[in-house]
Length: 316
Image (cartoon, rainbow, N blue to C red; front, side, top):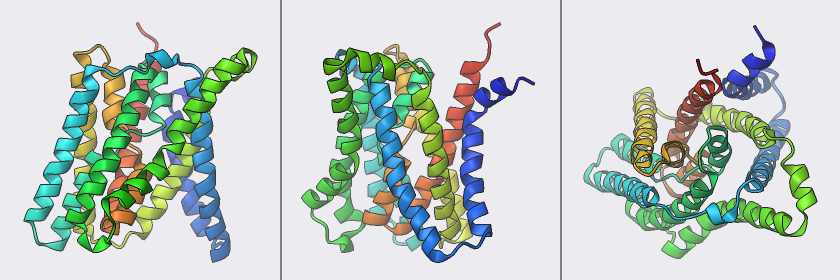
């Protein structure tokens, strides 16, 4: 078998396996607590840096005039916001603690915005990075508004006002979206030579994403291992997050097909910023809901791996 071909076809599963294995290897080595905490803190800085770099490189490859509003974006915004609101309503109608955690988890799966890394995968799949970036900005703003509105309903003991919640989410997300856009715009304006150099390695953003994915899976594995959740609730959240992932990819592709952007809309709706979902779960909701973000990380990356594998297959 051609090793280079194998690595290209299975780069995502390998990256995910390396991330999970790294966590268990570190755990098996019995490293001191201080060392483990230092590693976790380092990852918290390395991940955003990698995302910033790969988005800058990706945005250097698009024309900003391509970041247009399109019909499918409004349909998907309504779809995601509507289902999140539905699960918020269902949460208010149940009293059993585990059922409330499950409803919050499902609300989080649908409310969670598009992953910043979705631009990299969309480019690899031949989608429209410009319109996906526009949707990413829209859904992140929508998520900030809706989380701020829903938190007092699902977690009234949080004591956070609408504007404080809104500001906390915007501060967490938008620097990683707006910053790379501004840097790419300045490079395009000021130094065409630097622009050509940065874009001379076609798959560099993808390679950076593979490293970021390994780190994300390592963090996800740590969260799932340490989650103090009953087996029944864990299985319910596992199944619910899988259904949410399938439904959102399918709906995105279905709606996008009518506008000639099936791949783009599918990634916009299905590939989630699960790091943000985990943070929102810990910060605003019942901490157990962070498990949903961890499971969703696995599901959407498995689907992305399958898509990229199919894309790389030679056409007969």
